[in-house]
Length: 217
Image (cartoon, rainbow, N blue to C red):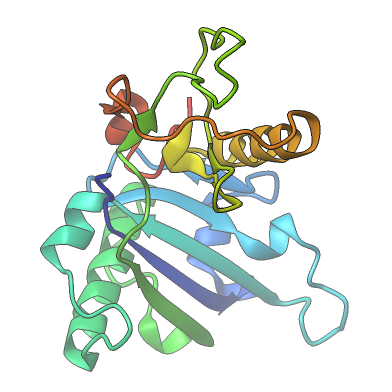
């Protein structure tokens, strides 16, 4: 399986002085970024989840940026212990890219105005290919259905596997893979199925490769 890398940067600003909210109005919760090669996605955490439960929080907005895989690969480091110098460089570049994307003047998003933040390198982020195998199972008296399983199960050891890397690099893909595995265990007497065989292979996900952050079509 081939996995890409993505930088995630979450930061908090005062809403009344934020240059971002002046461009992205309240109705914008999330957006794909296509006009800046360093970035892929932006989302507002407080617009997704109402965090204005106290008067103190009402003037705070929280944003998360996702970088492009190419950017993350170029500025890759030890993800559990990123050097301070690398963090500062990556954060500066991400914010500069966001300014360009939103048509803001350079320096509009001042680091000094950031109330709190967290940079995370997602080293094994999104699968760019998925394992595909036909639904061969241990009951040789019945023909295998002509379908892709989207999960694996080994009845001998009582172990199953599911996830986006076995069906589709997306949230729905991960959910559906888990649903199929659960259904198989509860409805089929837990026979082995989907295990690596001569018919199995990794197949490239063109949608995930194009978007960089999963299949978002």
